[in-house]
Length: 373
Image (cartoon, rainbow, N blue to C red; front, side):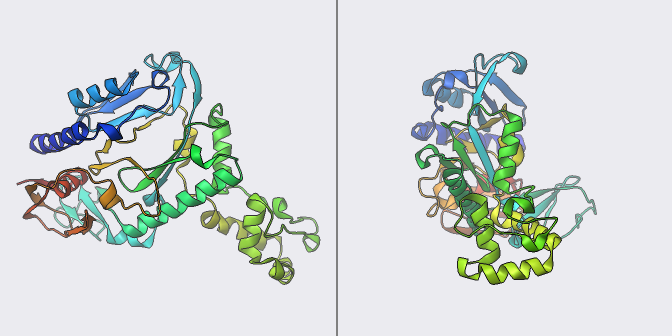
């Protein structure tokens, strides 16, 4: 991002922060957490201690960061180097990103920015301008991707409540500010879990490594297998419901499965992983030292806000997470895919000068698809 674009985006971010302190708060026990931030075209500043909203708001106004982070972990000495912090515990955090769902619609809303000549193009494997095959992929908001990510969130919350006993009032769902959702569990009996145990929890939630024997299969004598019932709790019931449908259909379906053999049943379980397992980013949950984007702050990949979703079914990120102003800005736009913000459609643009609302200009600049005219 060039200096003139940085100036415009920083001005826009600063105005948001000044106008919306009510949305930006330190989490519980801030004095035990590590904070960090980045500025445009600059590295990460970590190991910062903030003890109150007032200190946080002062940092936002004086530094005007591109991104702000906070640890899910709590430490005795959060501002010391990592080896000296004295880790105590960490909130559970889950990341669901639309790009990881690999939906077929993605070809319609991604473009590529050439690493060699900065040309932006779509639906080609190399740059049509310089023939380079090196590029960064850029994706814009898509309602189908957001809907699919919402469904994964609902699936996750259902399992957290029914299988892990986490109360709904202790679960917070945030739009990430780009193309996904973050699910925070700030208060639970799982805070003391370290990375190894969290990895096992991730495997459970994603339904990875399931063994046929868990669901009633007998390897030595498959014909004598007794499968779980559809109304059983946890994964037993979920798997049975997917394979057999209803309880009344189980006897007939069981005969069919037994006739197909053990390995076919094993493959069915593997195929069910993406269907009934939750598609989360494992590394996010496992890492107990990660600093995570702070709720209420702007995501510099889009200019949209990481914001708490009170009702995820009704949440519309193109409206509800877009807080940048509506005054007109003239940009040279190079965005070959269309997107929507605040109810209006923008693009596609091919190296054309357009005057658009500031929020759309900032969105494209953050995506690398526009420069100031």
